[in-house]
Each structure stands twice: as structure tokens, then as C-alpha cells.
Image: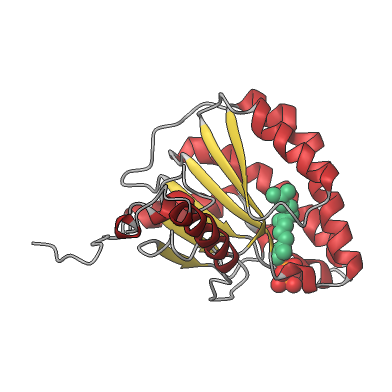
Length: 241
Ligand code: FPP
């Protein structure tokens, strides 16, 4: 993949809540996993489009801490899809110049899946064209709770002075500590909710809620949303002259 001319004032970091796989499958009289499989194919297409649009960071919400409440069949199917996706895409992503990272709590995930995640992070560690972050067993509240635990341990051990806890030091304990904050958060499927996704990090992000179901969200729609962002004025709480 080659970087294209960046879209003017385009977002550097786009985060996506990929919603609507179930409804997409249901509309075709198929099981929900059929929709998740179609959704996974779109992930590849959107990944390939990012460098053309000047998007350097892409973060996708693949499985939330709340998604364990789904049926055992769906959860097991999704976990097997993640294993297959990583196995199948690993070399492609590496050769395309994509650096992959995972955020979320790995403790509840199957060991075999975690090994695949670690390996993919390792083999793509020197890439820099696109930074793809996959949120897997991720929830913002869970992330903040885990971060606070680590922070409290550092304070208890004398490594951190409580007076030094501020807006700069706290994010260093989050899963996203190496990433810039998202500029644009997109949610597909017509739902206007954040669902516990990057709450701290998206404090000043622009949001775009699109009606299209995730398996239908193609590169043209993505490009349109990214270009529309370039026309917005971001003020970060200030006023423009
Ligand atoms: C939400 O749709 C989607 C998910 C919970 C899973 C997201 C997973 C993928 C797109 C597949 C693979 C991703 C990667 C990174 C390999 P939903 O099931 O909530 O849809 P609904 O709201 O219509 O029921």
C-alpha cells in the first residue's frame, strides 16, 4: 500500500464502532455470524483505504467487555473468527506496512488467541504506514479501572507522587498510551451511542453516525465521511477570531 495525498485537514486518527452485522445478516435470513464474516472483509477494505486518505491511525471496536453477554454460540463464533482473521491476514498486514496493536483486557481471552495477537504485534512492530489498533475485550470503564489499579500500585510503591497525577500522567496508564487521541469517531448502523468506547481519548473528537450497516460500509462511504471531517471546524473549547 502507498500513502496518497492526504485529504485537506483530514483526520490523522479515525476510530470506528463497527455496528450492524447482526441486522445485516438477519435481513438476509442468515445467522448473525454470517454478518460478522462480511464485517471482517470490510475491515480489510477500510484498512487499505486509510493510507490513500492520509489516515495514519485506525482503531476498530471488535469486541466489547459487554459482548460476553451474547449467546455462547455467537461469542465462540466471534472468537474463532478473530483467530482465523489474524492467521489469514498476518502476512498481508505485515507486507502492507501496517503496524497492529490490540487494546483491551487479554486475561479473559483464550490463550491461543492471545498468542496470535502477541505474534501479530511482534511481526508488524517495525511498520509505520498505518497504525491499526483492534479493541478486543475492550471497554473504557474497564480500561480506566485497570489503569487506576496500576497507578495506585505506583503510588503505593513510591514510584509516583499523587501530586503528579494529572491530564498528562494519567493517560500513560491507559491501553492507548502510545496513540494520539482520535480526531474522528464513526459509528455505523444508525445508532447514536458511544457504548463505552475510548471515552477519555475522544473527549474532543468529532463524531459521525452513519445509517449504513457495517458490512455495507465501503471505501467510498468511508472516504466521504473522512472528507466531510476536513470541512468541520474544531475549536477544542476555544473561540475563533
Ligand atoms: C456489532 O454488530 C459488531 C460486533 C460486535 C463485532 C465486530 C466484529 C467484526 C466487524 C468482525 C471482525 C473484526 C475484526 C477486527 C477481525 P452487531 O452484532 O451488534 O450488529 P446488530 O447491532 O445489528 O445486532
